[in-house]
Image 1 (tube, rainbow, N blue to C red):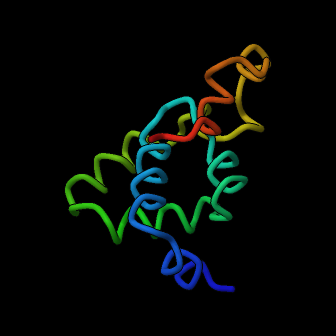
Image 2: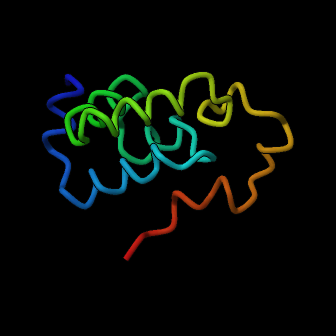
Length: 93
């Protein structure tokens, strides 16, 4: 299934939550993939499609090289399973 097909099947609430998670510094792309099935490139495509051009550019500049957005690059102290890791699993209602 293509990432565009997958993002088309997401609800507005899911898209909103993905955008929110993508903006969060401490939520890795792997958490988004685990919860919604979108890998990093699919998240980038979704962000591009659902944000103003200037906001997308600002987000990409902010995410470039940020080690906290990739679980494999995170310092060991951040992978302790604390609330900053599990927060993405708490339903936002």
